[in-house]
Image 1 (tube, rainbow, N blue to C red):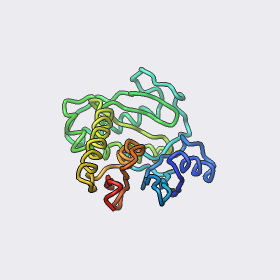
Image 2 (cartoon, helix red, strand yellow):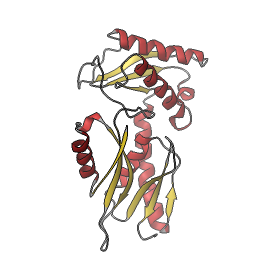
Image 3 (cartoon, one colour):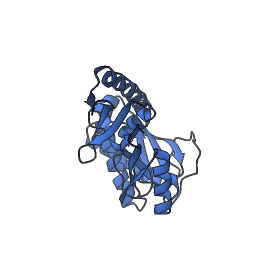
Image 4 (spheres, rainbow, N blue to C red):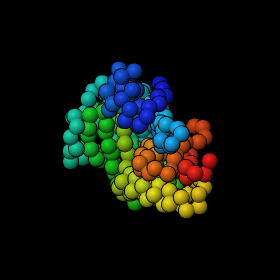
Length: 232
């Protein structure tokens, strides 16, 4: 299910969502739809969308009926139970049917999360343009996890440390774009991104007083518009 909440700040909106839904804050994912700063004549606000039980490309569902070890990053790369082994085998099989090969290891285990590392000579293809192939493979894996009765476990796939590199790249993009819109006193619409990537742009620029951000479009991959506050 998805719900929308508004607050004066992101923190307030998230706290409101937790109270209204009766959930802990780590039991749902948050997508920032719009963020506006205080002005002399208008109070600022943050509008969020909360995802409680549906997986969106990487990124929305959490919790497991058979829980992994809780809150600890571990180094044992071997599947430790039947569920993990089925997930590893599924990822290998899909990649094989794509015409490639990969060694799949457990990257980390956390409460409600299982990370897998793909070691392949075809990593660039598995990642795809802006990570879309990796996101698609991750989504399929989460759907499969759900079919096994573990729909609330979030499976995260990575290869060549792409997730961290992408995050760093998006932070740089956010600051560079903010500088451009401030210089030109305009707005810039970024390329479509998944919910996690959009939230990263929003939160990176949230504390910059003369910059606003909002999501535009429909579907999973929406665009973030970065706006100079004096533009409108």
